[in-house]
Amino acid sequence: MDLTDPQPEAQQRSFRLPFAARIQGILIFVMFGALVLIGQQRNKQFYQIGLPVLVVAAFLQIAFGNIPPRSNWKQSLLLLALTWVIVGAVFFASIKLAPTLIDRSR
Image 1 (tube, rainbow, N blue to C red):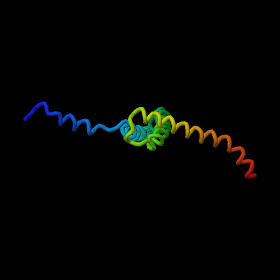
Image 2: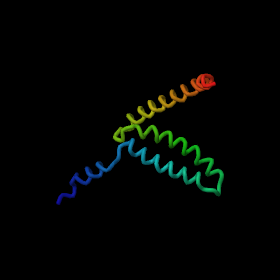
Image 3: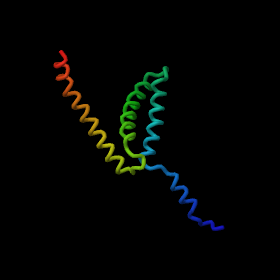
Image 4: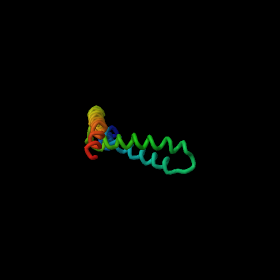
């Protein structure tokens, strides 16, 4: 029996999740925690903290939900930036198109 067997170390590495998968898991817990803060009825400050945390975590979850779970941190951040640019463009286009669409519906 060899005590310096590298096999247990290799097994430990295989259980480590990639960056994107870890962030997705963390975001799920953050959203759950924010829902608990929003759902409690004793302290208004907890509600005021929980609501923006939930909104930010939900937007991040939308982005990370579309990033392949095996992505490393660099790929994840690049894809996150791309996702935020696309979401920003959709919001900008919606704001610019809304008055035109309202005028045409009259």
